[in-house]
Length: 358
Image (cartoon, rainbow, N blue to C red; front, side):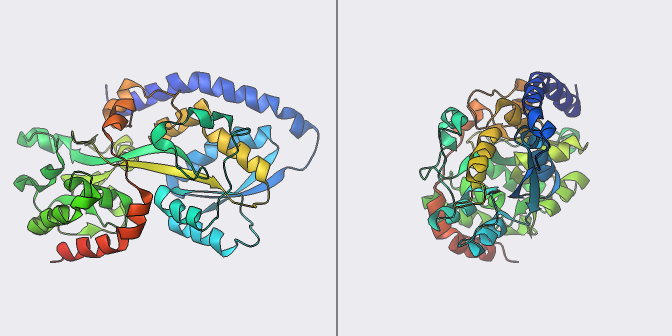
């Protein structure tokens, strides 16, 4: 069975129950629409592209249930979303924002986010331990892990073994055709850190490995889109990226597979937070709870390939084999402090870029 067939099969099977539940929620909210009341407009910063489209799909039933019209504002990056909210901190115009944990750590330090209200976000109690943040103001909606994509048909043709360790990107047969992202992109930074075992204390050893093999890394790709293109075209035989980037390329028909190396990877998350003193605080908390509904988590898993952060939602074996993080993969995954990354990232980026200069 092809990877695409597996995806379709899992999607149909899991969403049958989820869509039924969602339909009940929509019907439950029909009274709002019949009353003729004008919908409340909420403003939510989100992502562009397929991920943004998936998140919008998650919230169609929410809009109907709560008689809400969401104005989605796509940002070019998580950092941009946080900066926009910081600029309107004294009089917030935005209700919620999506992004990544490191950028949102900065928002927490600046006091931009409202605390999660467990009396409304009742599903927060089902969050996996690795999804929780100590400030209780940011909610992680999906896990991702950095690993390798590789051109499995070319590997089979050449008789090459699939990659199993982080050092495999330096195998001589791949020299000059290795895809590595700039450390400005989290997947690129995670890959470098894993060359040192995932411990920030070993970052200098990891950078030394890069420097020793820099002739085989022709470029640090500045964007995930450019690395995706090389994975799809076959220009790169192997590359380090996130499962939520590689699996959509696979879904489009590219002859790649995704693997998380045996030593594991660093835990990555996509986050959402309600803006402190935002226009609609109660609805914002309902919005957070909606992201943790099993049907919402299933949709994010099947369409965007996130590992669910709601512990009651299981990853089917077929998707786990493809690279969607399940409980077993997350056991091997290593946490990393957002504060450590925030405090050191600029210096790390400069050192990595210098080490790979030609």
